[in-house]
Length: 278
Image 1: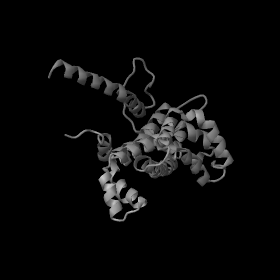
Image 2: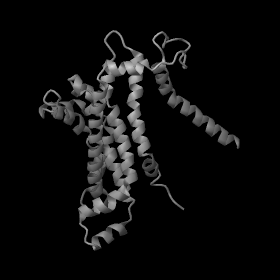
Image 3: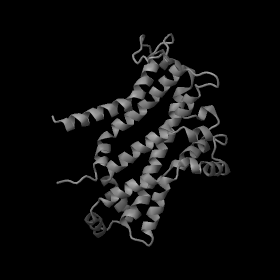
């Protein structure tokens, strides 16, 4: 092994340690007993007395299962809407010819540069006008969480690039066989872009599951809280049980890991879909 490879591997190891460091500290805090100082200096990464009391304690402290169910409802519907609407919007931008197509695509792409915080107040006013807050009903509360994130420019861009990679001959053969536009999109194109769909599903699920700012603004009833908002509820005005918060954060990451592992094969295919094959 030459020096260049050794330096490259060393740099990757350092980056991996930096990336996983906060998670290891979070896990260490969640496993420490109440008599251990979590703010000791120098920091102690390995707990002196391993305990699972923090995990059972946080489960009893807040209605954890209710928060998990709410997060699954919001994340699941958000993923479904993003896959459906992004694929529907991307198909004509990739495969159809109409006047101003490129201008429409560039306009959609330009919205990526607009942070959500900039448009948050207008969206909140719209949600209030439409009565999509949890004080109206449970359904309205979930709708107010989901609809602002039902589709985004990144999803449209990703699906458009996937559709552009499909040979024109497949579409022409389907037209000769009598397929209409909807059949071509659903039966020909959608099965061929599963890796892109899986990639978009993972990014959307992670974003919806870990979203904190918008739910904390829209939701007012505790029984409607999603998991990040519910975990933050453990932090009081004058004190915070960081062991419980760390344990809750660890539990909250488990569905993300399971979801990613379930779609890992498609995700890897999606990230290498544009690679040149010899």
